[in-house]
Image 1 (cartoon, rainbow, N blue to C red):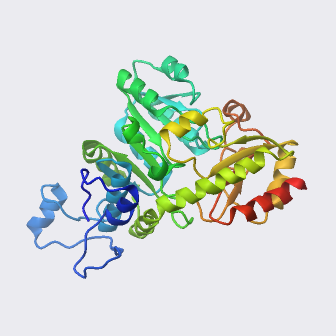
Image 2: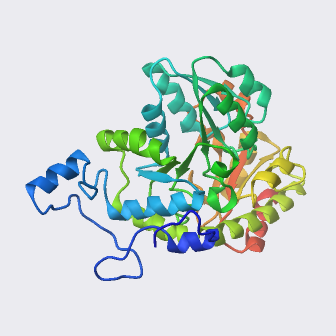
Image 3: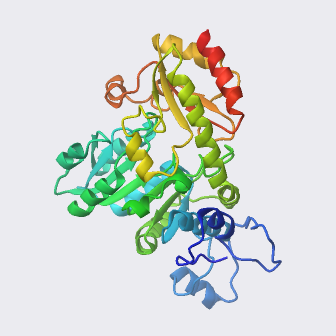
Length: 394
């Protein structure tokens, strides 16, 4: 089914029906085109395909029907014009920055992003692209950081791991005012809970590895952007540099998208129950979850999101020793650095996802030694609360 932007179909329908077309076998479930290359009817057709004067598949590094089906479906769900799939979430950021920026350009980035995202933007400095990191919730800080050379604003909202909420419409207006690309990492919410393009963003980044897959099976990333940006900027970079998504991974993500709206509702419902429990436990000093009335940006999250997501972070009393003791005592939470799985996950950000940052950077970001991040899965919420209660009581 081809996506009709005027169709008015609901997200759940788009998740199941958009992306790809029936093949010669008229299969109901999209196939995996596990091929590195494609054949041509003639030498002339091969030349035309390589030159781009005739549409069609060329080589799976940059044209593959399964990857294209995933791209079409995600673009439809985000309300965007076009999308490219990449090999990972980090390669999606890499592709976006190197395709759109040049030496001498300046980026304003939220200081509260995934630790490797901070490292990547710092790495760009060797190519002459400077980055200023700012408080994601302070519009004044973003405005103060603007320079004549500012060409991109990058934000992850909710943030990782403290679930801070940035005002997307306000930042979009600032980006338009200074002529910069406005890029939103929508990994935590996905289009099931938040559609940044509808709020003024120009580009949306995804780590498909997380909630889009939903079962921790494959690595992948995606960039949703205007068709002209994809065709003229992002696609040429992908074709040449090769941070490509594999057909198998694209098929896994394509099927994962079919259940995304249902899964995100379930993740959000359970996460709110866990956050409410944690906020009342004597061993917990603070809980970070935008669904709680105590969250500083709760009202903003309620305005620009249709749900609060499956990520809950909290601080225990007793420093890293106590945090590790709680983590090790949990039975129903996998100790790993991934998120967005059907299985609940527990992570100590200070020594894993943000462990490569300096102590000063972690302090500035608010990542304490006693901070624990939960990715709430699809197990029974009562069982998860019981597991947390037992671990915290120790």
